Length: 388
Image (cartoon, rainbow, N blue to C red; front, side, top):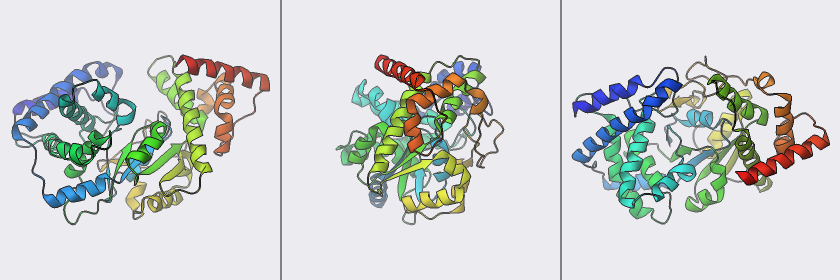
């Protein structure tokens, strides 16, 4: 194993502040990550793709056709749901957001296809080292002089990539499938006694692509997480305040919330589906046992106790909430009401006017607002959406 990988890994690690990456370290982080990922990819290229057995490939593509997509507006609790599913033996859970439909696909399309594998491989190497800018980092473990688990992941991706392109070329998201197969190969594995049934991907706002997900993966399961709009908005606002920044993203948060709620209500209006499950974040925290039973039944997996312990790649993780900096890794936190002091009266009225009806239909209580103010806020929201 090239010693440069270990050295570059150490340099990269020094940019990963604990418990969260700081604003100052974030400036040097991209360069350190890119240098390390390029060295890992080069070492994997020298070693060549891993060898895959016929049975492994057959089991892999059986799993590949049965994904679980977790979606919802940003700050709605999608990370918590993913982390609760993470360590179940029947699931291979990608520990970082897939963002294929929302971001990576368009970035791939801007490049020659011959570059896709290396681009996506290096991108995912960085995500496995630093999935969400907070502990735990290095989800496959540290590299050593004689072995790097990240080189093994890259070699696995090189092996699964042409197979995914060949066997799933009828869907545009086959590169994401290749990543999921490589990650599953390096974690759960596809040996004869493997319990693996599905792979799991989480990306906020993927509910915008619900019909496409159903079309490309007819056997997919879709978990849609919703949360009280005051809590979602306050989480965004509080995070920016903690960074010393002015919160300027309110229009986009409102747009994403409105869209997410509309999709949730449309799906609720349909007959009970075996492929779509809506979860309220508050119910997950307040009635955890019942919700875990619902999740397990929906996914047709055993409701094991590990579903109560949030992890990433098997490592205990703290809450990703903006309001729980002292959260204990591997434990569920109680619902907070910090929005009471974070939101202004104008914030609350604006939220009620723009998304209040949809939120109320999902069981959330919002205070009444004078009709003339509702009309004013709604007009402003329509104008801003046209601008966006």
